[in-house]
Image (cartoon, rainbow over all chains, first blue to last red; front, top):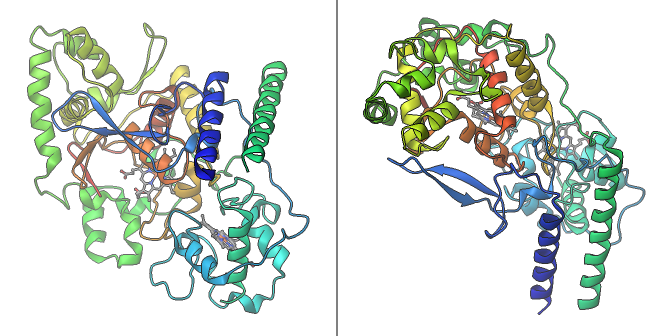
Length: 175
Length: 300
């Protein structure tokens, strides 16, 4: 029941945005599909296109459309840590999961042989002795520390929840 | 929980309502962030590549030399040119598509009107891809890429060849093969093309999506860096070999490639043929100015 209500709320909300005309009309988007966001797949020997659903609705964030009137999210400074306790084991899973933090796309993390080099290695990270709020801020919105950072603002853009961010901080303190 | 949920909806709709009315009353440009340009900027012409890799892929002979000697961690410097002749002379799906494209082209051009519509003189396709696309079309009043014109001109002959479709790309590859080896030559002294180039450059650095990534996040800031299994490369020299045969067994157009890069970086893709994607096409084509057309080509 809980699930259904939330689903309905999201569906209604989606409908409202579409009715209000907030979504540009040149997005690769079909609100009648499961996630809305669709992408073209050519069909062999055909002059038509088929479409597939992306795994999530990407229209929640600003696109490159000239008709996009929404503001991008400005940097957000974290005043204090949210209530709750992080779980390092969950944090580790989030850091490795391609569909979640995917931190390993840019950072070297212990136990991973295939990692990215876009950010500094986080192997031995606890030795830097950063305090929890600073680390939380870095993952919530790194732009506060470096305005031209390439690290995604996981918290500000509501990609990860507060609990998930706490889990990541807890994990980073163990490595 | 139920009550809570509904309260949330109202709060959010209210916020959206407020944001909307603000947007309509003030008309101020929405807040955006941009990736800084690399030293030297993103100026047209392959020789202006900022990544230091141009000297590895400047011509086929050079690519062949370095393809044989570069260690794995430096192979990104080849800018994927090792997949094209002379290093890779193998037959692949691009060759099949090119033959299909020829058959479709011959059918559509039975009366000579298709070639004329595309801008060819006396049915001669030589140099059409290299010297005539993308261009500003005065009748349409906007900049067009080759695949958009293939769709438009095919429609006039009663055939549906949607921009981005397999058959459209097949025809495009066939037409491009008449420019094989000819340097791409986008006329940026044309004010309309220059304006599209500049709009495309701005879009290329404009951040979006949940990641707050721009195209330049990967293709400038992360060029040559590892992104888990992949290594993004310079945007220079990226436009003279499209549409291409992707080894996932797909004939892919440049705009369809954009939708792939968009969704891979958590950015909502746009429609194939949109003005934004066409501006990006002009921008990337400008960065490829001076680089020879390859048809058919292959990319992983």
